[in-house]
Length: 145
Image 1: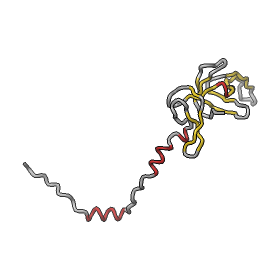
Image 2: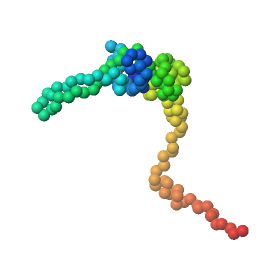
Image 3: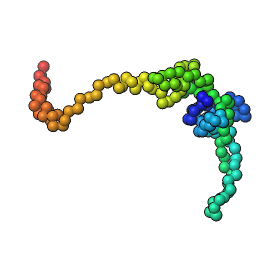
Image 4: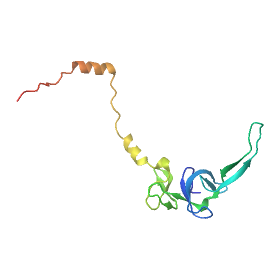
C-alpha cells in the first residue's frame, strides 16, 4: 500500500470521485484507507447511561486504497508513487517532479550541510570580561574638515 497516514489524496473512482482529503486512518491488512470528509455514514448511538442522550453521528467509512491517488505537495498533482533510496532509506518519490513524498526525509540534504559547520568556540564569562577590560578602544575622534 503506497498511501500513508496524513497524506493528501484524490478519490479517483466511485461515488466520491474527484474529492480530495487527508488520510486519517489506514488498514494495510484489508487494503483500505479512511479519508477525512469522504464516504461519511450515519450511525445511531444509543445512550448507555441515564444522563446521556441517544444521537445520530456522522462517521467516515473506509475506502479501498486502490480508489485513491496521493497528491504531490510540490506539484499539486495526483501521482502514482515511485520508490527511491535517499540517504540509505527507501522513500516515496513523485515521478513527475522528483519531490519526496515522505515528509520525514524531505529535507535531508539541507540538514547534512548544517552539521558540517564548526560549532562556536565557548568562552567563559570571566575570560570575556577580562578581554573587554584589557582591550584598547579604537580612536573615534572625528576630525573637522
